[in-house]
Length: 292
Length: 287
Image 1 (cartoon, each protein chain N blue to C red):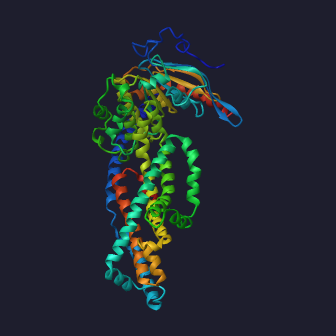
Image 2 (cartoon, rainbow over the protein chains, first blue to last red; image 1 turned 30 degrees about the horizontal axis):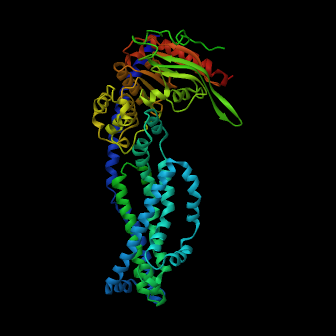
Image 3 (cartoon, rainbow over the protein chains, first blue to last red; image 1 turned 45 degrees about the vertical axis):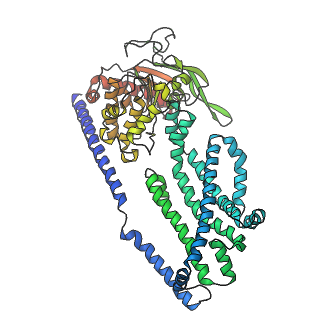
C-alpha cells in the first residue's frame, strides 16, 4: 500500500513541523505571561477595597459623632496622637522589642525543632503532643500565671509572644520540610546524595514557601501575644497593651483607639513587609502566590 | 508458560552476551536483571507484581519496556534504580550491586515528571547532578553542562528558570541532567508521557540523536509502541497479573535512525509485531 505509506510519511513530517511551531509559540506565550504579572496596578485592583474602606470609615464617623462616649471620632484620635507623640513612641518601642525578641526567638526555635523532627521522626513523636498542648491552651489564660512566675519585667512578654508564634511556625515548617516532590527525591536517591546534600539542596529551599505561610500567620499573632502579656502586667505601664489597659480604666477613648490603631498598623506592616520579601526571595514559588 | 525468552536472557552469567548492540558488550557492562520477584501488600495478603523477571541490557544498548498498565514496568525500573528493594532476585549494574552502583553514580534517572528544582536556573539544575555526591563523579569524564544543554537545543534557556519553560523543554533539561555526569546506565520512566503528541515526536528524535552519539545502556519504560520501535534495539513486552516478560522483540533497524525511520517498511513490520503481542497480552480484558 504505497499510498498509505506516503500519507503517513507526510503526516509524520507535518506532525514534526507543527510540533516545532507549537514549541516556539508556547515559549513566547510563557514569556509574555511573566511580563504581564509585573503590571498589576489596575483600577480594578485597588478601587473596590478603597470604596469598602471609605464606607466603613463613613459609618464609623457618623456613629462616633452621635455617640462620643462609645467611640471617638478620627479627629479626636488624630489629636491625641499629635499632642503626645513621645508617649506613643516609647510604648510602641517596648511592644516592638517584645515582638522582635519574643517572636524572633519563637520562630527560630520552632524552625530548628521542625528540622530536628523532619530528620529524626522520634522527636516528632516525643514532642508533638507537648506542642499541641501548648497550642490548645489559651494564651490569655497563661498570661497572668507567667507574670506571677516571672515578674513584671519583659521576660514573661517574650515568653508569651514566643509561645503564640511557636505552633504555626512548627507545623508549617515541618510540612514544608516534608513536602518534597517524589520525582526529585528519586533523582537525589539515585545520585546517592548525602543526607546533608538532600537537606541543603532540596528540603531547605523547598520548605521556604511553607515557612512564609507560617510567618504570615505567626507575625500578626505575635502582636496579639505581646498585647495580651502587657494586659496581664499592666502595673508595669509600658507597651501599647499596658497603655490601653490603663486608659480603659480612665475611659480615655482617644488614647485607647490611638493605641489600637498603632497595633493595627504594626500588623499591617508585618504583612506588607512579608509580602515584599516573599516576592523577592520566593519569586519561583507560584503555588503560594495563588494560595494567598 | 507462554513466556518467550530469547537466547540472550538465558545466557549464563559468565558467557558474553550478544554482540549486536555494541562492540564491547561484556558481562560487566550494562544491566543484568535476574529472577526478580516483587510483591506489594494488598489487604491481608500480598499482591504478586513481578514474577521471576529476567532481562539484560548490554553496554550501550537501548531496551524498551512496554506492556499494559499494571504490568509492573515502572516497578522494574524503580528496583533497578535502587528506589525499592526486590523480594528476591538480583540486579547487577556494571558488574556491581545496585547499592554500589548508585554510590558510584553509575545510574542516571529520568523520572516521569521533569523533577527540576524551581529555584535553580536550567544550567544550575543540570550542574546539580555533578555537585551532589561529587566525589563519585571526580574520576568521571564530566560533560560540560552548557555544552550538553546546547546540544539539547536549550542554549538560549541556560539562565532561565523551569517555570519559564514549556513541558518539552523541562523534560529535555531532566534528560541533560541524567547524561551530564556520564553514568553507564540511564533509566527513563515514561519521560514523554505528559507531553502532547506533537511535542513528543520531537522529543523522541532529539533523545535519539543525542543518544546515538553518546551511547549508554538505557532502560526505557513506555506505553507507546511507536516510541519503543523508533528508539530501541530490543523491546521487552510484558504481560500483567503478575508482571512477566512475555516476549523480547529485536528491532534490528539500522542506526542512526531519524525522522525518516517512521516511513520505512521495517519500522511498520516491527510496530505491528509489537502490537500483535500487546493485543495478545491485553485480550483477557475484552473476553
